[in-house]
Amino acid sequence: MEIVIEWKIIHFDVLESTNGKALELAHKGAEEGIVVLADSQTAGRGRFGRKWYSPPGQGLFFSAILHPPFTDRRLFVLPLGAGCAVAAALKSVTGLAPRLKWPNDVLIGEKKVSGILIETSQVSGRFAAVIGIGININNTDFPEEISQTATSILLECKREVSSSALLDICLHELSDRYEHFISGRSEKIVREAREISSLLGRQVRIPTSGGEFHGNVVDLDETGALVVRLRDGAVRAFTTGEVQLVREASDDNDSGLGR
Ligand code: BTN
Image (cartoon, rainbow, N blue to C red; front, side, top):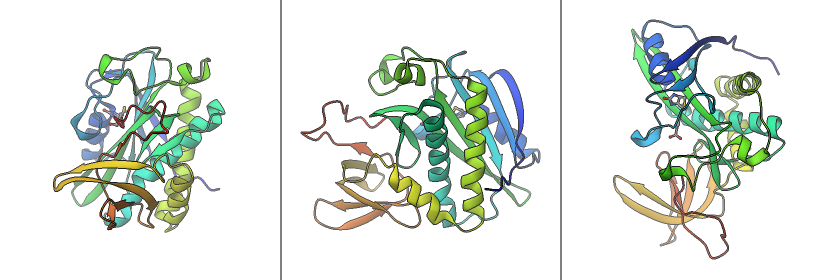
């Protein structure tokens, strides 16, 4: 598969947030392929205004600048593509079978090993998407609020992996999905996301500004939206939101918190 992006890594010891720095560079006209990498972050940010725990020596924290050629609904697939890329990289490094919790949390078992935050900017008519990726590598413990729901490669594999090797593989896998995305083959990404989905067939709760929805996940549609059969039988496609798993009788280890 042809690699379309030439990555250029800019390395920092510490940053508030690699996404923040990447957005700043994008505003100044940074080219596609710039990757901001930090050994630690003092204000790593996550989805829904949360923080991303980013201590030194424990994880991989980086943000890649892309300039997608379109800004419409086709962009919905980008988070899935990034999640699939990280899941594939983790699979090749660990031999495990990570799964994707829609849209882009990467889980090992039921626990989260990686999170992705995509932020966009438009400056002088030029659109940029910053793909911020955090992967827990060497953590053996976590802050109280995520201690039941987060995991690391070390905890799952009982061995150390090289963060620079993992970064290279992540970028390679990201190029691969991005190539599908920009060349109109997003169905490949959706197919992969379906195959590794942790949510298909599961009972979920989805809080939205318009109320909370409960139902059973039945599919990912061709745009990457999560298709849920609601309790009243109606079928609804969600394009955003934080999906929480509802504890089922058969779940032994599910915290039900969805993080
Ligand atoms: C989430 O799961 O809520 C998304 C977490 C994203 C964390 C990464 S770490 C590198 C990049 N820089 C940030 O500030 N956030 C992302």
